Length: 256
Image 1 (tube, rainbow, N blue to C red):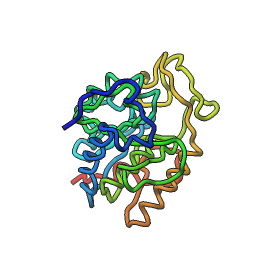
Image 2 (cartoon, one colour):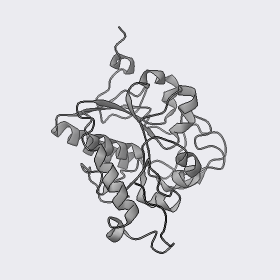
Image 3 (cartoon, rainbow, N blue to C red):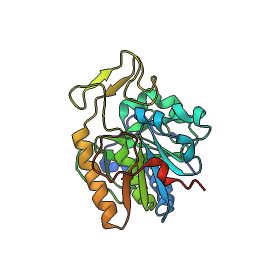
C-alpha cells in the first residue's frame, strides 16, 4: 500500500543518510524488489528519444517489453499503446513534466529528488540516483549512478529485472544543439534533437548532453552484461554510438 503524504516540508526532503528509512523510500524499495529477476531470459527494448525514432517502425514493439524515457508519452497516442515502463531522473524534465508523469498509468521510476514534485502513487517508484560515484548498480534498491543519461538508469533497471538482452533504439548519441555539456539552456523553438518538435519545445529548460560521460556508463553496462552472460545491442537507425554491437532493427522480428 502506498503511504500518503503526512510529512512536513522539513522531513519531506532528508539527506541520503536517512532516505532508506523515509517511509516513501521504504515503500518504494519493497515494491522495486518485486521486479527483481522477474524477466529472466526475456529481451527488452530501451527507447531513446532521438529523431531516428521517426525512421523506426515502432509499432513492432507493441508486444515487447519496453523502457520509455522522459517525455516518450508524447508518442503514446500515435502508437496506440504505452511502453512497459517509464523512467525519468532529470530534475528539469520531471519538474516541467510532472503533470503528465502523474497521469501515466504504467510502472514509473523516478529519482528520489523527484519527491519535490511527485507524491507517492501506486505505480511510482523512487530510485536513489547520484551524479557522481561511477558504478553499474546490480541492485536497483541501492544507489544508481546516473551516467549523464537516463538510458544508463534504464540499463541498470533492465539488469536488475533479469532481462538477458537489452536492445537500444532511438539512442542517436548526436545532438544538433551544441554547447558546454550539462549547461542549462532554454529552447527558443522546435526541438531538433528528439522525435517530437515539442519534446523540449519553446520555453522548455534542459541541459546539454554530456556524451563522453554517458559513454563511460555504457562501457560499464556492456562489460557487466557480458560478464554475466547477457548482452546489450544497438539497433538505432543511423546512430552514432559505437560502444555496443550494431544490429539491424527489422532483423529482430520474425516476419513469418
